Image 1 (cartoon, chains in turn yellow, red):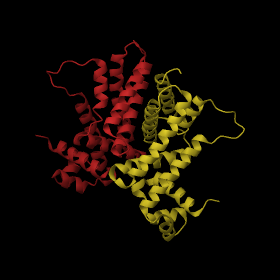
Image 2 (cartoon, each protein chain N blue to C red; image 1 turned 120 degrees about the vertical axis):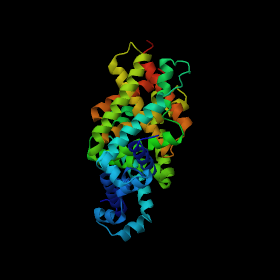
Image 3 (spheres, each protein chain N blue to C red; image 1 turned 135 degrees about the vertical axis):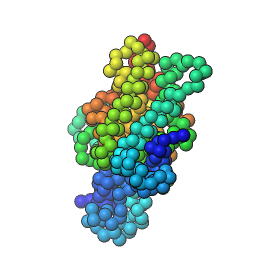
Image 4 (tube, rainbow over the protein chains, first blue to last red; image 1 turned 90 degrees about the vertical axis):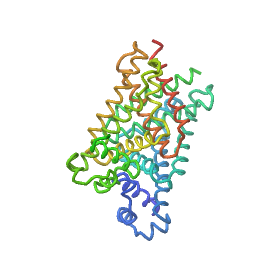
Length: 193
Length: 193
């Protein structure tokens, strides 16, 4: 069973995905999570505390759904693991849609409100480093700075494509095809090593 | 001198860039533009009309600042023109910052509100087609479908990088460097023709 704070964070992700960061009020969150506002203040101090921990929560959740595999599954090649990690962010499931919507909202709100910027920059960096490490396993002879730059591009492209998908400007199959093309182009640019 | 409706649209872009789409109220827009609310309703019918025309206005303005050149400037190679068109969206000027913030807000608001989706999809398509045409001049032997896919990726990456810049997760020089790398990788993938 989920702990009370996880239950609150799951509800926060749902509320943000439904109405945006600016639609998140502690009273409404309490109703959605089925807890008292006092309990929310106890666990998270204030609304900013809720937003910070929700950012962490959705980053961890994305990490999980892009890397979890059944123990009996055959091992993946580094290239398949790279493709899988990126493409599993482009799935039309409730969880991914909610996660991507909330992430886009937290990103967009940081344009206006400085309070989340540091946490968001850190979460972005961790994601970039994870993808850079995978690129390093596929192209071990390329310099680390080239892995990092390619990882920044692939993750920024993924953010851009997710927003196009969520805003109805493209479809999931098309976004996945574009993402596949970007992975191929970046790996080619990193050399055949 | 700007017409009354242009004056209102300039004010709308400022208000959206300052407080977001959800912060745009017709009363506040009237105050910012120095006109009556009646005049706004006369020109744009309703708030949705204002948002639609503001989207058009910022698309046209981006088109202008990424393509305007002095008549005495020497002609650009197709490749320089491509790089210029994309990189001029990554400039730390008031106009570009305001335009990119407003574009990001309109994109983000379309996730929650269907009313702008069609206009936004059309504006995105026009932008993609413009970049695809430039790619076609640099790599005329590649198939049109490959120009289109590369243009979709480069513009989606630009949206992703702009949001990272505006939310404080990266700097303009670094975003430009990443964009340069993406242009090189895409042109290489389109062949040496």
